[in-house]
Image 1 (cartoon, rainbow, N blue to C red):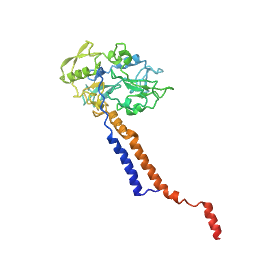
Image 2: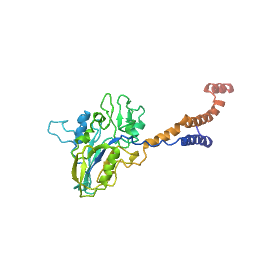
Image 3: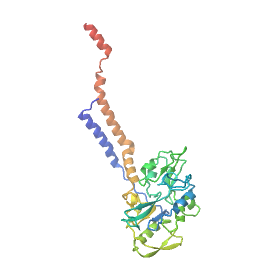
Image 4: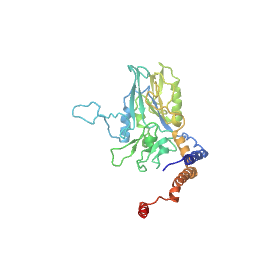
Length: 341
């Protein structure tokens, strides 16, 4: 079936009408931080890589041990050390290391090294919540914690594709799998506690508190001068416990303050965050952009109706000649040849 230029233009115009119909929709307003939002401030300059936070996380959430084949173990012993390479269905919190050049000095971009902690960022406007078709992922209206309901999950894994931080993990090895991600130990907070990673951290590298207060604390630290000795709160911002530490110097940015509309998990470091594997993201959430486009395209079903109409008209035009002048069947053609003979 061939298509001429006129019919091709009709189909193109129909598609253009569909796209233009989406411009009538108003952009969805950005979501804002709940008044009681809580979060974590991770300061890589205070992190010593002890991984006590990983142990605390696993104990508090009944997570199984995990190990990789590259881990050196005693002869005949397997599965003893908990040492996964990255976040997975058995690990919701992971300390990773960055090294450059000789890696002699901590928190220096060149010939230095740094740690970075990977866990759910608890975005203010989460892409995973927007992508989930069954509301298995929701954002608590009070605390802002992005929580997961395994009973509602259908295993589509759209959240994995949507998350710009590559956080949600799927239990591929389970008969009845679910999504695994940090939920900021909401069950401990309900009992008056704090996230296990913050409670276990001995240096204050992982600090729990209200998000606005954590941002204020982060800005206070950015004003520190390298070599000074300053007081750092540990475990929780309002807990009263502090420790003195030498300031190593900070990269002038609080990661998560604006990224993808803001996150409740904030980061500070002495090296650029891109070097630590964190994605460079704009200040607008992708969830807001995608929902605006989709709501525009499907508003009142006008766009799909126009596109379908254009396609139906094109097919009608292509098949009109065949309907009006159908080809002769082989049987009729044989009879005509016999008649001439």
